[in-house]
Amino acid sequence: MTPPTPIDALVVASAEQLDRSMIERVAHRRTRIVLAPGLLAALTASRRATLGDLGGDRPVYGVNTGMGAMAGVRLDPAAQARQQNTLMVGRAVGSAPWLRRDQARALLAARLRTFLHPAAGVSPDLCRHLIALLDADVIPAIPLRGGAAGEIIPLAHAGAVLLGAGQVLDADGNAVDTAPELAAAGLEPRPFEAKEGVAFLEGVPGLTGLATLAAAAVRVLLRQIVVGSAASHAVIRASHDPMHPALADSEELAAVLKTQRALLGDDPPTGASQAPGTPAGALQTPGSPTRALQAPVSFRVTAPALAAALRAVAAVEASADRALNAVTDSPAHLDGRFVGTAGFAGTDLATTLSALTTALIHLAELGVARLHRLLDPAVTGLPRQLSDSPGLHAGMVTVHKRAVGVTHRLRRFATPALIGTMETSLGQEDVQSFGFEAAECLGEAVAGLRDVLACELLAVHQAGQLGGPPEGLAAGALTALDEVAAALPPGTADRPFGRDLDRIVQLLENGWAGRVRLPRTTGPG
Image 1 (spheres, one colour):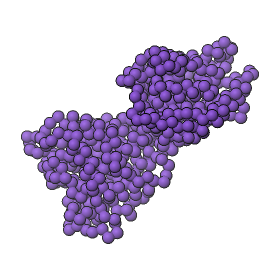
Image 2 (spheres, helix red, strand yellow; image 1 turned 60 degrees about the vertical axis):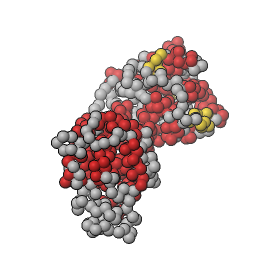
Image 3 (tube, helix red, strand yellow; image 1 turned 180 degrees about the vertical axis):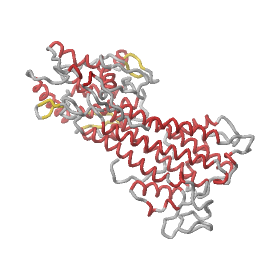
């Protein structure tokens, strides 16, 4: 694969340097990793200590014993020599759909990050092989749906590629056999050595990588919703009263309200002039009077809902940071012992991902409600359904119906993935966190919310065509709406609006309204 931009090298002298922001850069091929000599020396020392403590007859889970319900089965030396590789091939039971290429790269980068902790006890050579896969962009085909028991299924697919088995993604995202791709990249298969196989299967690097990418995408989408909802606000000439800075009960809400006021062209609150007909105390742009004393509720509560989503995404980012810095190996090599841990569970990340999913689905519901109000001439003063010829042309009514269907579908993803205890391994693994399921639900919420926003933006565009540009919008918001207009065909008559929506969704995916910035808060994330 050809990188989208020149790749800078990050010389990693300590594990902490490979943080969430760097994992995102590695996922998108904007940074390549080089391990500094001092870090390689530290890995060599921790590997030596691990091998030393593996000597003797003490049972070590997944090294000289079986795994799961087979943990009580001791392995002889011959079986131990084979087991670290068979751990991969016997657990690579997933199928398509596969993770996207950037998601799989994020998994590998997060796996590397956790291997830099001495508790993992893996060799520098294994770390170098992971980096070689990333550098050559030979990326494992990893199932999107992770099954149960932590991440053993998706991680087994990733580990099998190191062995020269399994499948990797081709340029089109299809799964192809690994061996020819390794050879073409000048790479050799690399068997797992003592404890390295079980270390590869433990922890939550997949969920950590997925959360990292999802959080970044959500921050972009929330900024876009601020712009889109402000434009709708201008279309109906809603009162700015709910944006008064004194109403901010948190840093997040203060940031949203400040951005809304800026997009709507408000002067600073002190000394703000009042337009004729503006309710007393309202913050309103001169010459842009309100149509009603109070806007519909969906307009008034959008800012608090955005603030809640900002807090939720910050919680996801904090969870990902904890996962990157925590001991997630099991058994972990600590104080000369091999200690069983709960690092594979992913409870923290699954919880915060599900909370963010709920916040985004609520924003989709608000978007559908705002869109419906845009169709009402009593609210906008524009033709019914935003039709240029009511009765002959449907206008935006069916666009709204698409948004309704999308949002109704999203409700099924609001159930937290943690809910629903299911046993595996004959009861040894009697509770699951289903982290990949939590990430998939969040991905559905992001895509659905983006679709609903596209529907709202199309309606805003149609309103502008019928009634002129929304009054009071600042230059940044108008520029963003011009970008939407430039992507669409001229005219207001009915046409296959699905094509228009596809173009707007593409704009959103490409970072539409990038000049608008939400002020960052001082909290986590």
